[in-house]
Length: 454
Image 1: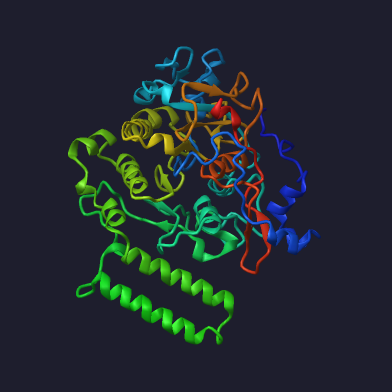
Image 2: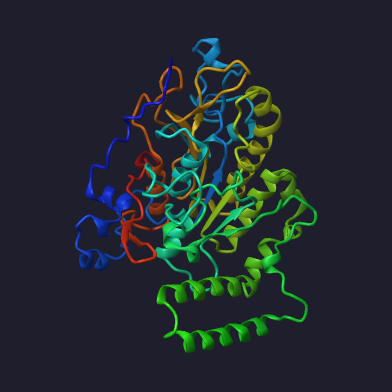
């Protein structure tokens, strides 16, 4: 019986890893030395600083890698399943039969077939992938809390603060939860002032609008600015009366709220989907997947650095039963249409070279098909695609074994996704971030996936 290996990651093997997971202040590292080691960008990583923006296309619930990106036609029937691979526009690269539009642009993205980690539980694995870590931080559980690792936009916000009152990231169109929030969607241990902005609403709905960007009757941008000045004056007067950390937290949160109301016209207009030509909206698909990806492109054009687009609400790709019919008829058609349109549209607009796009779930599915024609949780190996920001398209990186169960070549981990993201955005992954009481940690302990750029 195949079972996921729990010995791949092992214990922390370097001080850098210990700093990331265990907080350096607790490990005897000189605090003064660490605090003086501010975020640096040495530019030594391939693709370093190429990206102005990052779009994470997150397939919540974990897609079946062996039915989309890594088919095994020579495997026994109970493993290979119902699909046969088809050619792409790159000789020698084959994919599943139900992503024809993505197959036609395989030269624009790279497929990694040896992603891996050791926790096949949705909540924990989501935490890994959305933040770029391989182990849970101390105190973290399956429920979102302020002990969690910060998401990518939060790390960027801390290391490269914006001066316009806006957050560094937007997550849409849902907040992932199962009666409790999934970890990895906030600023985590750094505090709520680093949380991305969660937009909850279907951009495909005719009445879609974002309430936070809607001014109340009688309120103008000038009056918003006046209120901001008044709040600043009051903050100055009470500065000596409140705890400094709490004051900063309140100030930043209030600043973000005012930033949204007083946002530039370009940012506000990004959410007005009716401004987009009908033919472009049709190209992305008139469904939540497609219009959410179109909104991501519009946000990138408005200057938003990080956009996470959830492909469905909680665990949408969790195909424990009826896997093949559900992929073919429900999940893959809108995914194929939307992601192919996003990559092609960015390319045609001259934005792909400065926008990193990653499409991935939190893990893969079991090699063996279960008795209800489904595949269960499996983190031994899974696949992801990467495009833009210097990534060389038309290549496959890594391989799984004959059963699509474990990496047959070097495995790449969630922390490596994180290192690649931060490096692409011009952030040294070893840069320091700080928790709410000032304890430092490296933002990331992974390695840049260098083959993406070769």
